[in-house]
Image 1 (tube, rainbow, N blue to C red):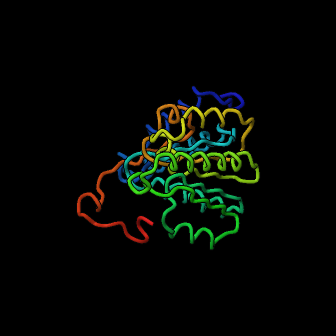
Image 2: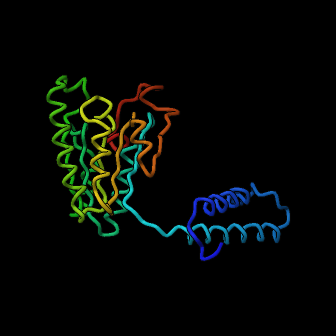
Image 3: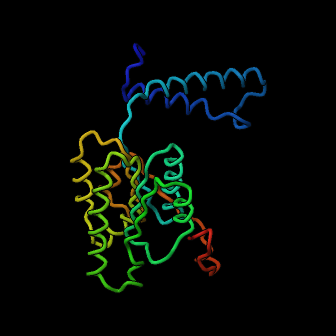
Length: 230
């Protein structure tokens, strides 16, 4: 691998070798501990090469979607990490906004580097006004674009924006076109909400789908509770 050239082939080969060696522990086939140590040393050497060959940095587009719980929670974990590094975070909520949440209180108490805007008024069955809902989404998107263009903000979370596009209040193409228009963007943008469009998923750098396996609301009839849902 001369000069550790960055190529998809080199990366793929190293990733394959790492997978073949495994993660270790009792899942490894060696009975002899010295052989196990040799395997893990090879794994370590490959991991160092995997890290060394990846040199590029860029502003990422990150998507948390799926029917499972934890999409907003995952994005707020990133917000916590960001303020821990002394960087600024903007959170714009496109649908939520009709209630006070523990995470908003906590993050505001932790740092002055949080700009939090809950611009929605709740679910469609609560608002019952498509015209007003669309107007609020457009206003939230207008504000979001200002934060994204502001280089002093390291992380911009657009909470439930995927729902806004699914409801037809904003198009995925509008989001993608705007982000593409920004040259050498260094901040990170997070889009949350179930039903992320195929075009958003294809354009994003990192996509995680939360899968619903069990939920107490559905299986047990348990209502939403403080500390869990809000």
